[in-house]
Image (tube, rainbow over all chains, first blue to last red; front, side, top):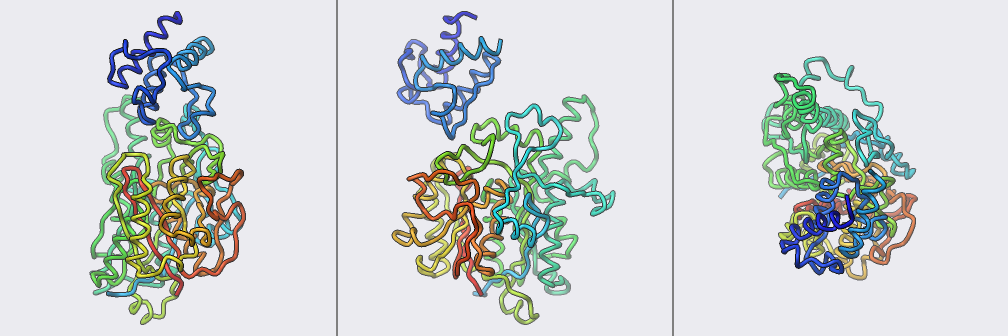
Length: 88
Length: 402
């Protein structure tokens, strides 16, 4: 899967969670700006795991300490890109 | 209004198969959490828990009973027998007709659901054992206690997630205090440590993979436990008249609802339950020496709970001790308040405060005396037990030394 395909898919998942159009989700958006709270985040990660058949190392108690960077849409895509390659 | 006392206590949990064994472990700050051992555990990402070890149902229960008793019922009956034997109470005649059993559980017969779903979905069977329903129902444990010990009064099961036992014990307390029942068997149990039970919790991303470290800055989530705690709540005059050994007095309780979020705790909701329990008990806040915290070890609970305690107690929050024994036995979900009540009884009766083990780094948002790592001797007159459930349902009990 190409990085562009991953990007489109992730933006689609995040847009659905945020109840926005994919065009409203930019690479620099943070989940907070998009109105995604902690439960929305956990649901997004679940949807991403299902869509890409990967396991995302994420613990809601220490979101900053996970290997998976959730600070922006861009960093989430980069993390998934890496996991898809590693877990391929 | 009647005074209400506790005249018997029983338990089985990861720390021990009886109250004395459990209190010894709490005194020593022993950890009952370890590698989980059950079918399909290798398909879980969370593989630790406070599992009850060395408990053989065979031999304790006969074949007919085994077909009807889920593990949560087995735990309940084991704990109930210890409590009732210690109390020395025998239910017959009018006492039997008016006394009942109110127990808490969040999941009921979770492993019975799990085993039978596996059988029909995975193994493709089209037939299940005829007693699946009476075995898994949430009130099975309460009903079997009523049958075993001849309790014919008000009996039911309370299910409010992690506050189930505290809500159940609050009900039993109210029934004895009002004169409705001379004695009540109460507490709760849980047995969710099976593949489906842990898998469901894993999904929420709040579980720790290594340890339960309540209030520690490096805490990273909760750890599930299993077991039961059961007590005899009795009218003080009734207990005195028969010369019963009184463990402590139950002096008040309060319940509140956050009415805000299905999983995130609320400081205001917790504070209202704590201050409500003090008001119901008609005692000044500065008489409280010990609080058994809900203390799950999640980022959200522990800081919210500390803030609520600071709000209610003001400067006295710095004088009292508050520990989370979940660090040792894990989170027993619907049974947790019952097992944790034992730590309050130990504080009041033996003057020993159970520690919060696994404590490694101070957290400025949890800056209370959480009795880190080692038990402490202290003279405690009044103790509280907190339980704050998913769904925002809170229940706090107040106990006093007799």
